[in-house]
Image (cartoon, rainbow, N blue to C red; front, side, top):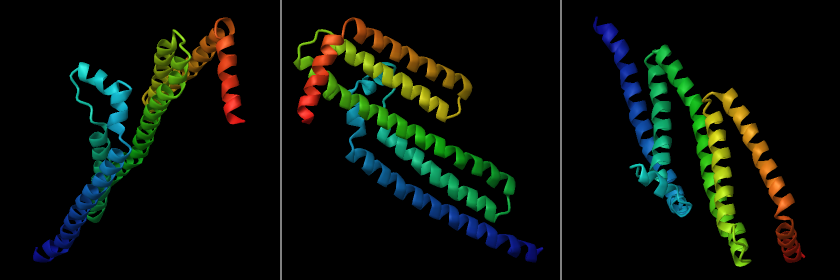
Length: 209
């Protein structure tokens, strides 16, 4: 009986040490992620593009920097928990957590899509829409909102597809939305925006020379 206890005890000891070490590693990477997101001012960008305000209207306080950092933290905790189960010989639990770990790559890609979309909208509002406003074009704000909405729709569909939430349906909707956007933009420029587009493109060409 004592021999069996001694045989099991080292496994519990090393599993516990591994998990404690994993928690420390998780905290370390959480702080690094938090500092990185603070440096690139993600929350400020979300506030400028109106997303933070939108969440506050439905009673949700959005802190993307903290939320994404905690996801990173849980990734490392689950990773070391999987190793701990493997040390204990609990292969069924470790196999399940391995699948969870593999799914995290989809979550991380979705986060990158979200961040990229946020900065793209912020950049477009500063540069493109700002240029239209300087030219005193009446519908510049409406155009800016439409452009931002298009980016959000496409990025949301890309995130849902990446997270494997009804991927076949999301892919079909994604293609349909792109076709609609291309068609609307084409008609708009063809019927009303030809002169504006020529002037805008001419100015860009002159700046590049």
